[in-house]
Length: 323
Ligand SMILES: [Mn+2]
Image (cartoon, rainbow, N blue to C red):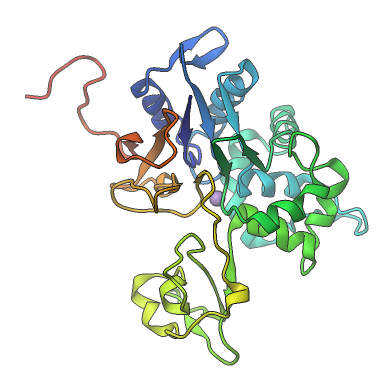
């Protein structure tokens, strides 16, 4: 049985707290549980304070057989960042512009850009599967849609890891392969109707929005669009063309991450749970969340466990009771 763990984003100390809460203990080959396995849903890196420690914990668990992991968009981007563009000398599959560097700088600083450790982690990221499916469940970082899963298969090896020769194709913007991997690892986006734009809270004018692809009731730009509450009213409350709406077939449990959920962890519906509770922000109220699966065919509220991003001033690890 598996304990699915959401996006960690470099919060190693909180990861250890979560693992210990769930009964995992450190052994000479890393953390493990006597009867269960951990299952990381991607995005170990970027943003947080202890990304190398996070990688070392999880990589040891995967290598010892104590855990599985699927590729997150941040690990995908990390590989594309270091992979030379085959046709453009001096360039990389992910461009090194200001915005991309800013998003990745904490990782580069912590791991040491081009260090042996950096290369070791990149080599490991390349082995991670894009998705894992068993007879009972499916796991992917951002979005499961059967047609996209099938379309991705020619780019994947027998373990569902990206084939070495497929990386350049998947990174070529405005192509079908790029759209496929973007959807699986980064989720869905939709263009607003012709001529319609909105301004995000930073004042940037935008003509696209991410969508809540898992919510079958959300069929308009406003109800499905993922924008800050304060600007939601700018989105038209008109239907999104059905060809742009993805839906999940609900045939198996689906565990994913990526979406910066807030509040108390809970199922999205009977078969779907997003386990990213925004620890990447590291602010009070954000959480590192897991779902402890016991073989059930529907998501149970009792299955959610979590630790807060911000460690309480006093806690019970030492056995000391708070008066
Ligand atoms: Mn993500």
